[in-house]
Image (cartoon, rainbow, N blue to C red):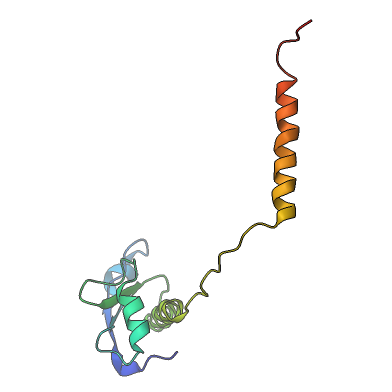
Length: 130
């Protein structure tokens, strides 16, 4: 599922962490903002994203992703795009419903026989009466 570029807003910010003077001078980190409600995503994907238990999704329905691991702004933009695409892909995947199953008769018998064997072993550990 692709996201049109006009729905995503980028802003350059200064990165945190080590890097010497470069970190203090250059705004190489990137904030990506994506408004879920105003997007062209299908309704079911929007609903799943809005209900997503993730700190990147705000209460207003805006996804905020900060990428700052690379030295250049272009690489950080690409990383932010990749993370957003991964988030949308996860939300668009609908897991198959689990079908309840029952153990077979043979499986029940094997389990009960195993329990009986263990019970015998433990009973044999008791006091010996003469």
